[in-house]
Length: 226
Image 1 (tube, helix red, strand yellow):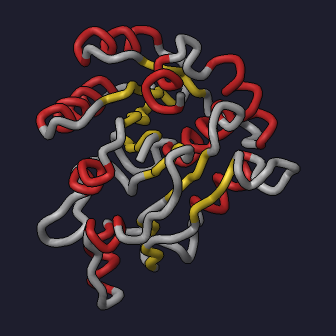
Image 2: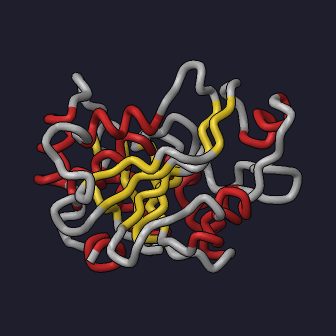
């Protein structure tokens, strides 16, 4: 596989919007496929549908350029995957998720995790084990507000201790250059973009921001999408 895995420092931090922005930014460069392997709380959230809406799938773009890979585990209850699976009388494993994959050498994957890197999948495996199995570099979505330095640096440290590649960080919310500089200095990582909270949240606003502000240095393109 080639592409990127989008994780977060917390739940509801902005991973889905970041994933949509990645598709908007790079769809002209390579065939892209978005995948949400595990979705809990399906009675109120559908991240695959939201990425399809925000990335413009079905609005004149060819399937080859921009595609939703709508396979994986879909469970009720907005809780951790291991608990949602237990409540549903099933069990999630990294292997069962990995076995669903298909694609070709040209495809670049944008994979969105559930919660953060240490969220349990079952009694033994975490989201970090899935990242390791997919062997994709990781983009960390982090809030821009107070507390983000600690949460982001801990996420980066966990990833590196497990020998997982950190591609960069996207900070979501009101721009905060002091927090950005601290994360870059102490995390030895690049902040790829500072994404605002869009109001309204539309495909057009995502497209404009991604074209103008996302990965201006080309780090993600060279490392993940070329």
